[in-house]
Length: 412
Image (cartoon, helix red, strand yellow):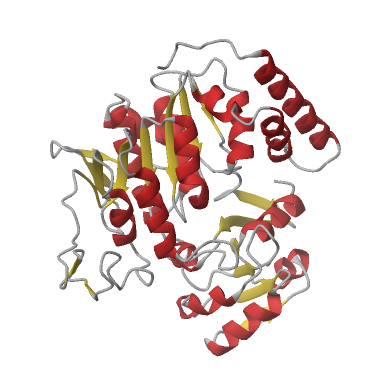
C-alpha cells in the first residue's frame, strides 16, 4: 500500500488547503498550533479525508492512557530508519488533529499516529493500520472518558477481526482483554506499576490473582499470555531471546517500557531492534516533557502527569529528597473537570521533599496533601513557588493544561 499514492480528488485537495489556511490563521492569532480547528474544517468539507490521506501510508496507531505521546515519538524515530514518517508528534490525537497531521505527509511512507482511547476503533476503521500498539488502560478524565472496563470492551469490539498486527502489553489485564479479539497479537511484557484498575477479571468479574509479575483469574481461567518481547532491566528481549540494550535520554522505567513496545512495533515494519533502539536515543524530550529549563536562575525539570497511574510513574523518577517539588493541577476541559482522582494518588511518596502547590485547583491538592500528612506551601504562581524553593534543581509536576501554562511561563 505504501508508496502507491493516488492524487487526491479536487474536493479533498480543497479540504486540505482550507484546513491549512485556517490553521495558519489560528497560529497567527496566537491561538495555538491550529491543528485541531484546521482538521475540523477539512473534515467538514470532506468527511472521508482522513481515510483518503492514509491510503498511501503504512500506518501504526498508538493508544493508551499513559505514554502514548512518548511512544509515538519513539516509534516514529525508529521507523525513520526505513523511510519518511508523518506523525501527530505534538499529541493532537482525535480525528481532527490526526487529519491535520496527515495532510502534511504526502511524501511519507509511514504514518505513526497517537490516538485518544475513545477514538481508536473509528480511526482504525478509517486508516486501515498495519500495526496497533496498546500500552495500558487506567482511570483518566472521569467526567469525559468511560470507565476503564467500558473502554477495554470498546477496544475489543472495535479491533475484532482487525487485519492489523496488535502489539499489546501482556502485563495489563484490560489491554489483554481488549487485544484478545484480534487474530494477530504480539505480546510485550512491558510491566504495570499501577494495578488499581485491574483487580477484577474483565472477562467474568472474578477476583484477579497476582502472584509476582503473573496474573490470572481463578474463576474463568483468563490469564496473562506468554510474551514474545520483554523489558528486562535495561534491555529488550526479542522473540529469539537476544537482549538489546536500551539507551535513552528520557528518564524512568516507564520510558524503557515504551521503548520495548516501540522496538516490537518497529520489527513489524522490518526495522531490527538494534537499529530501532539506537535511533530512539535521539529523543531528548517530547512536547516539552522531561525538558530542563532555566527560570529565575534555577533549573526546573518539567514533568507531565495527568492521572493516578501517571503520577505514580513520575514519583518514581524524580530526584530523591530533599529535592524541591512543585505540583500544579488545573481542571479545565482538556484535563477533565473532576478532580476526585487526586485521592487515588499516593502522595506519601513525596515525604521528605519540600512541596509547593500552584494551579487553578491548588486548594483541592492542598487538602489532599494535608490528609497525606505532607508538608507543603500553597503559592500563587510559579514565580512565587520557585522563589520559595530551597537550592537545587526543582522537579515540576503538572497535569495537562497546567503543564502548558508552565511551558508558556518559562518560554519553553
